[in-house]
Image (cartoon, rainbow, N blue to C red; front, side):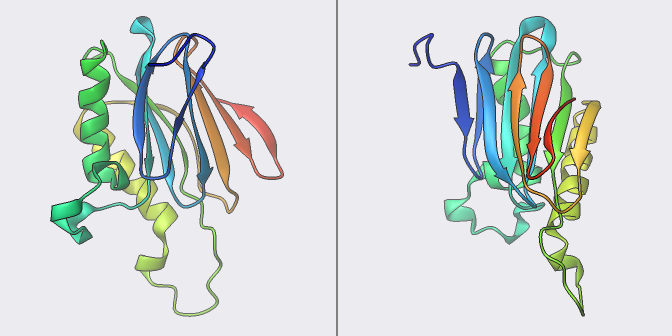
Length: 167
């Protein structure tokens, strides 16, 4: 258990967690990965997933990490947020990341467009659960760190060489 001093809960790569205010939740190193937050602001509860890949169909099922893939992470994130007091029908989402981190000169295949594919996959899953995306900061070519505050519903985004934005 965390003490009241430990205000920030960290989410690693291909990881997820849920917090209630006064705690905040943060993930670093979003390049082509997408950081997605599902929250119920009235209940001051939020979950964050650091999604690496769009689709779990490529996973080795015996050792699958559900937080790694958009199709499995969103479903588990929604389940956990509701389990922590969030209410179906009151959930909203914010997301950031999905950058195109590398420029390919020739023969760019769809497989190399991981960032845009992650963004599309996360959108599709949120739509499946009828969770509106109220704000996003996606694409581009810079890495991001995000921090969500369940009390205010504010997502702070630190973008490499671009400072901090709030959405």
